[in-house]
Every structure is written in C-alpha cells, then in structure tokens.
Length: 314
Image (cartoon, rainbow, N blue to C red; front, side):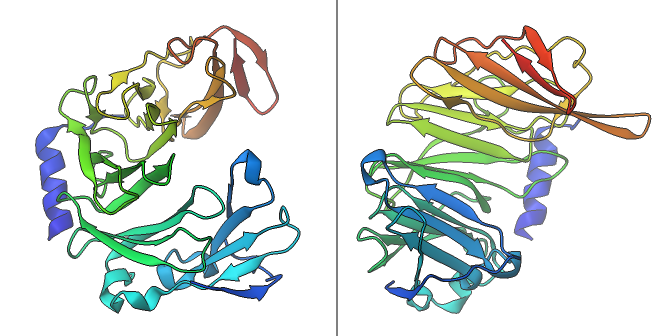
C-alpha cells in the first residue's frame, strides 16, 4: 500500500517524458559482487572490502573483510546481526544494505526497513572488534539508500529515495553530526527542478569533499540536461550547476547519475553517459567533461573520439 501511495503522489506531482575478527585469508566466491573502501593516506596499510553471497544484497548475505597489509591477506569480520530482530533486516522489507568505511576504525552498515520507514545501522569505532546498533525514524516514503558518506567520525550525509514510478523519485538528503545516532533533513525533492533535488530520475549519486563542499548528480531519462547540484555550506543549500550539452546530443537522455572527481581544489572531471535509441538500436556515449575552476564551469570542446565512442572534452 505504501508503495502504491508513493506512485500516486509522484504521478500527482508531475507528468513524465523521455563484531570480531574471524577467518584468515578468506577466499571470496567468484559469484559475488565486490566493493572496496580504502582508508586515509596515513593508514594506507588498512583496506576494507565487502561482498554479498550469490549477489543477494541482504544483511545475512553480507561479508565484510579487512586487510592490514595492503590486501595481501584478509580477515572476515563477523557481524552481530542478531542484535536486531529478524523482521528489522528481513529482505521482505529491506531493498538494499549499504556499508561505508571512513578509515581503519570507523564503519557503518546501513539499511532501511520499509515496514516502518526506519533507518537501521550497525556501527564500529574499533575496526570491527565491536559493533553498536542504531536506529532512526525517517521521513515517509524513504524506501532505499542511494548513498551514504561520512567525512569525519561524526559528520555524514544520507541520500534516500522513494521507489521509482514513471521515471521519477522523491529524494531526501539528511545529515548527521553525531556519527549516525540522529539525522536532520536538509533537503527534499522540489517541484521546481532548478531550486531543489529534482523529482525526475531514478538513480542518484552523491559525494562530499570535506564538511562543506558536496555534489549530487541525478539521472535524466527525459532529456539531455545534465542534472548536477553543488553545495558549499554542508548541504543546507544547493545550486544547480550548468553543464552544457555537446552539439548533436540534444535528443539523448542521461540514464546514470554522475558526480565530479577532483584531484585538487580546482581540477576535476565529470563522466556523463548519454543514451538514446535510433531506429531500434541503442546508442551509448560517455562524455568526459573537465573543469579547472572547482566545478563552476565545465568545458565542451571535443578533442578526441576513440573507437569505443568515448568523447573527451577540454
């Protein structure tokens, strides 16, 4: 019923268009999807990675591994999932489970239970030796985690979305200043696509560089308009960044969310996947934009075009 109500709400808003260390040197099954999280530069020996057994993204199938020798050997970290009742993490109510590790000590494993719209977290501050359980009631229609990120032990952001309907989603941005115990809503989908997080798009990405500067990118299945937002005050206010559409791409759509990757405070790149169907044939091109002013402007002068149809801009 809740998801049906979500669909009705979205349709009414818009019309659509285009624990403790265990096993050593664990072998990972080849049918799992692997992710990695690396620690800070001064802790470069410490690495984390995780997988889901049979690619089934539930808490019971989650495997967390830690290396203290730059990945030469791995220890599986046992998770105390029994600190929660089974209904809290049952895959009947949970759509995705998202780990995040800040450094060698601090990590969070988070999920949303759709039966009561509650964010559940197990958190470690000692490298996985012990875990604490946290829970927090979220806004209605917060049904899955799009992205979670911490930049300090206490400061982090959570981007949650409703289930998608007609290529649209309600999006909530929340912030914590106490390590995930409590969360404050700092932004939500706006009916004006240029003044808040837009309802259009069913995939969303987020990245913060420090406590102030952050970016959110949203897919755009109805046009070639790149939806990219920037904050300079820790997420309290956001402004839409203008990213020009390359000539000839006006009839494409953008089906994957993108956020900038910076190598310093001025220079960065932004990969955007443009997609369309032409006479029944799918066409996909990746455009790499560059900036040298911290992301205020992005260039579109094409200077290379390889056999894989990857376009670079300068």
